[in-house]
Amino acid sequence: MDSASIIKDRRALHQIPEIGLELPRTAAYVENALRGMGLAPRRIGDGIIVDLGSTGPLFAWRADMDGLPVLEETGAEYASTIPGRMHACGHDAHTAMALGIARHFTSGGAQLPCRLRLIFQPGEEGHRGAAFMIEGGALEGVAAIAGLHVGIFPELKKGVFGTRKGTVMASVTAFEVTFRGKGTHGAMPHLGADALLAACQFGAGVQTVRYAATSPVQPTVISIGSIHAGTASNVISEKAVLAGTMRATTVQDQATLEARMAQFAQGIALANGVEMEIGSVVGAPITANSDERMVDLLAAAVTAAHGPESFMWLPDPTLGGEDFGEYLMRVPGVFFFLGADIAAPHHHPKFNVDEEVLEKTVPVVDALIRQWAALN
Image (cartoon, rainbow, N blue to C red):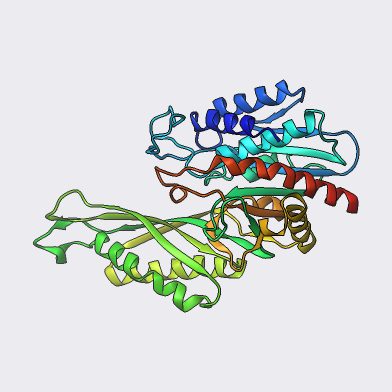
């Protein structure tokens, strides 16, 4: 396998991180690379799909391409050239590995046992990119799909692949709660209605929603990431806005958290004499490996490619989110992970991956496709 080409692609992509569904430079790089291999990529906005092979059922491999609004602090020679934007989650590595898979099957060294579609997806980081690609036809004719994320599970050692049956990643619902009161002088709070006080009570107490509404053996989390209120130290705030995420590993818990949190916020508002508005957006559904056969095929493929010591059954899901679940809700598939000796946590300014392990994905995908095609 040409490890140097994967690393070269990853570093080139790392320097041009783009956010959301609009990735013109990234899409152009990927498209040009695919055309250089003699392939005919097709656009879905700034997403790309490309088909390889001519006969047999259609297997899909997905790679996400978008970056994050993070100011890079790695000090790498290939660091981001766009201030305030960074590949801080490994999507540059995912894209480079997908290009490596394309190169593997177009260089003459490997023959496809079926048709293969590579899906290069924008907007995974909260922009519903998977749904965007699906609406654009990325899953048309697809019989099965697979995808991978670097890192995430710290127990995965460098170069070791892992997954589990059932839920592997949580749903992610972003929410915003706005309290509206009546401003007044800080010396006369009884003449106003304190929106900030209500917001503080909500932020401090919202964890009781999760404890009271969901089973303690089913992982859930509610996180408040920001709060904005007030204009002066001696003025009672007339508006306060909190934003955060709630995460769950079952569909029932996801729905319960949304309903109970809205009830809790309304109760806080009534107790403080303020008005309340709440809105939420599901950024990613639960990612669940519900097709056990596909998971077993993945474990066998890793063993065939690198030996049994290179695969690990993960005991628990993570509360991190991924919109790959959109694909798994529609076709059989498997989502798995690669230990990549992460330098800092995901979404951190110093996030980086050990590039040496990236080439290990290509023979795993080759083996997975062959084992799947033999059964279909």
